[in-house]
Amino acid sequence: MILALCNAKRQSGGRNPGDRLQNMIDNECGDADSICDGVDLESVCTFENPVKPDMTDLDVDRIAELKTQFRAKKEECKQQMLKCACCANMSVEDILAARGDQDGSHFGGGGGGG
Image (cartoon, rainbow, N blue to C red; front, side, top):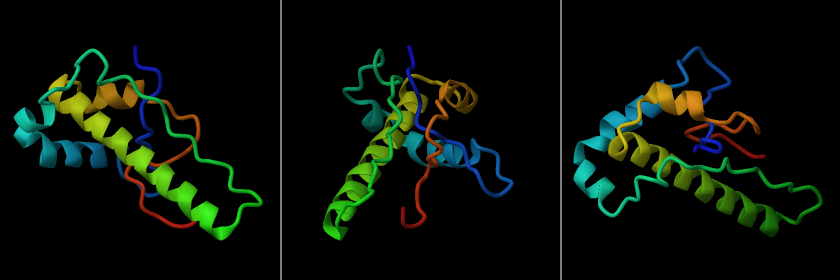
């Protein structure tokens, strides 16, 4: 059962939410043997949406540390989405239909402060 899938929704621009995910799949799934080596197909499509930490009243060093940790969790989630598509043959449409949209974070990350 998929709990919540990394949010792949873009909140700006006119792009289809699956465009970036499809591009990543197209670029990365070609070497599915190495991507899928050792992947547990029963758990590969189970995700928890990374929750952006509360940075209120924290010093600059702690904020930087939390941002780094949050970005790492988002990257891990993107890699799980890739494995789900490449190894479990889940379509972009199925991934997007199953994803959670609870915290408004963007798939693909990038972008500024916060």
